[in-house]
Image (cartoon, rainbow, N blue to C red; front, top):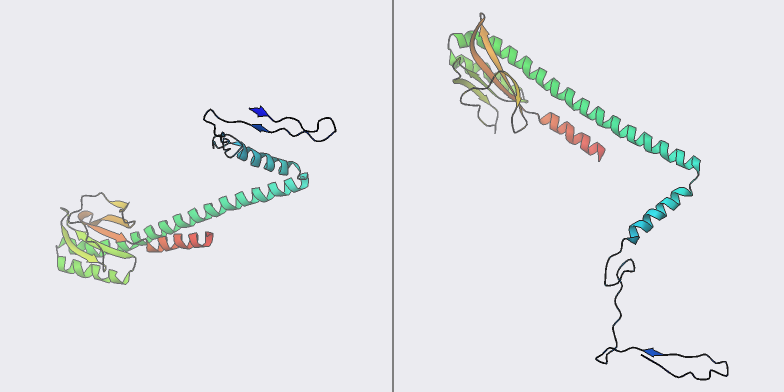
Length: 219
């Protein structure tokens, strides 16, 4: 490095000093670029998040106590309202699901009562006629009657529905298939004697529509 001689140092003029630094090859050294946050070499600094945090803390510290209390009340009311709405939605959906089960159970009891004598006499043609009125029940998508040995003897299918199981190894009661439909299997008795089983499948489309309606309202 070299320094240029002072010009006019004795007469009060400005002293101009120029420093020129060169590398060993004679070329001027390039300055190291600075990255974000003031770090050399393009490194990313972490000062920006801290600056934002300090800015937020500084803004909060300048708020009055009255405004802080109002803000806290609004936040608490919003959280309580959100939790209440979620509770109401879940309760409503559970009630709809239970109502669907009760409706399906009532239809199954009626069919089982009418099918008892038919299954006892093994009049399977009449069994088909017993299931025919289900076409007027939009929620019932499939139904079937099985003999005591589990053999399929009568079947009802709505348009576009998958067939009922060829045999019925499942126990009695409610279940849910992978498509989201509710299935009910119930014993058919006649004179205290088990003469077969009834299989019914109900579509939960109305429950899904209700969920979508809640999502639209929430959105």
